[in-house]
Length: 135
Image (cartoon, rainbow, N blue to C red):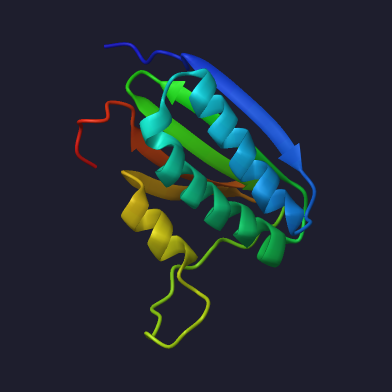
């Protein structure tokens, strides 16, 4: 079976400023409403928040949020210009930070990092479009 391209794609660039996490959450929520996928708003906003915050705090570069539907999968990608890959850490109950990638992993169907020194780093997470499909 041949791979099909995206059904739709939306992309927005944000500055490395704390307010950009909120703007990124609004961007994905608005696109999901536009495409009549309200059941995905909460999980996708949560993952967007975590990935955007990582870009702001750790990459300290502008970042791009891409939301696209490919067949029955929604893919959220946050791309930044830092060569440093995110690290999923073990955290203690008392830790106040460091749970971002754990949240991404537990909220999305799948996630990963595409990193190549010749291009920007991309952290992605996927979600089932069908609200009755399991993760």
